[in-house]
Length: 88
Image (cartoon, rainbow, N blue to C red; front, side, top):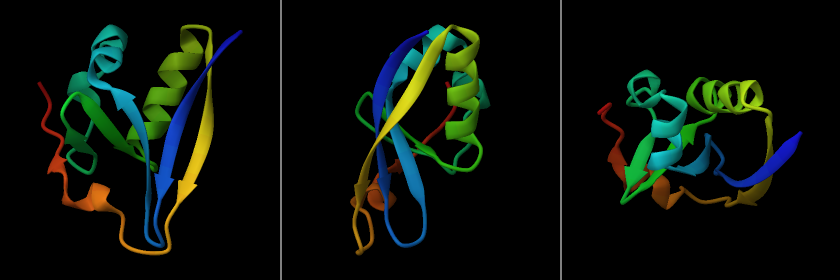
């Protein structure tokens, strides 16, 4: 199985994995991502509870294991100030 490493950002209240929008397009899941995720430019920050889980499961179906690279802050993450994700 192939692997990819994704940044997993978290603050005291929540966490997100960062993936490129075009990868969500390739997986055909752009319409399944909720507005609890965020977007800045072409990077989508998938909230950890549902959207990140969906992404990981779809990647596994395609023979790719997702490996998190953890980035933690004890302050409010700037990701919270990004635009909410809107399905295409």
